[in-house]
Length: 139
Image (cartoon, rainbow, N blue to C red; front, side):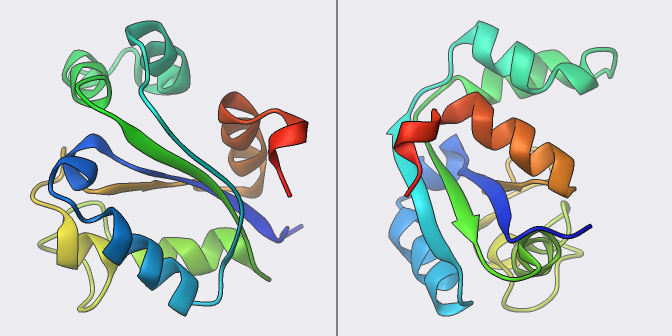
């Protein structure tokens, strides 16, 4: 069953490159409502936990290092069909394969530094949102 919320992070590369405002503008223009948002920095333990599903993959250490190198913008977004619509908005993981005008095509520099995270399912959106936000932080 599709829900109307998804989770996103603007990753350290996009924050460092000052793309936060442009990315948020694209999110708003696509009809998403931001119900929670904060600038924070993940600890090594946070990143290892959040990306635990990838712990056996060869890129896990590099992913943890990347995600902890600087601040992120974490947000919960709301819109009908939120997960699928947001995945379309951000584009393919590899920016070279991302559709024209998608966030990753515009702002990502590589597969590893791909500007934004978007939940891949309704279940993961709920889990990931709860990882970063308490109930009293969502409006």
